[in-house]
Image 1: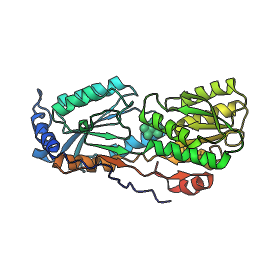
Image 2 (image 1 turned 90 degrees about the horizontal axis):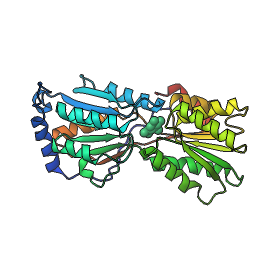
Image 3 (image 1 turned 30 degrees about the vertical axis):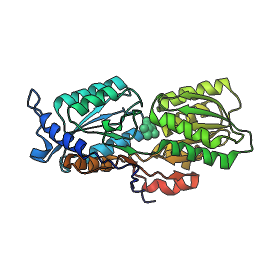
Image 4 (image 1 turned 180 degrees about the vertical axis):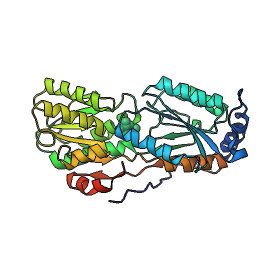
Length: 334
Ligand code: GYE
């Protein structure tokens, strides 16, 4: 199946021409740090972009990092500075501060959690360095602290999984457990909310919910705990494929058959998840597209050029059942 191309939805246009002007000219000013620093994009045409990545917690994250590194290349007019925060907010804040000191042209990051960003974003704004959010949102009342937010609608993803579950299993009195993503992260908060809204009114009973931090290892450990505590689990909702894959290991170790004795639904659509779906061990996956590099490059160029950019770019996601996964796997990019 051909990959869904990223399409854009303009939710709010930014009319802040003055903000871009400020960003562009202060970026020059910010390019005179002690020690030489960068040459301003306006001078040499190269955009120095500092990117603070969440970590390397999942297959999704690996694909997202690859997309960014493959797109923001010298050939494409970028000097990419990349750092991995190992899923720690303090590391991201430190990386952003370093980029500010270095006087990069643009800062982009995927915020590990939603809250606690206003101070450092204000520092970037004061330094005249525009910020682009990718993948995850920040929870701030001041949306002038960033230029654009590129990523999926996580509430919608959770809702789509929940709707499929209700469609397939309502009326059977299913007991469900939830493997949540990183506590405080936008996709964990939003996917939970969307799923809960969709199963409301059905007879599906969410009996327990804990974080597995989006990793396979923690997903497995949490699932082992659930299996020790309850002997009647019918369904697992995992906030990402990696935790679903960890749950599969725990379920098999407990002598049960994943996808049959215990149904599993998840979000992402990375290769290992799609393979497990095609193999009948997962029952349904809503895709979350990690290929955000091209949109990030595009928005960064526009911001530096002083062009107007969309404040919110919503990535379009597919969904797969077992037959759909078999069909899609051969041409899957990640
Ligand atoms: O679903 C998960 C990753 O923020 C959308 O983070 C991303 C999530 C993704 O660790 O696998």
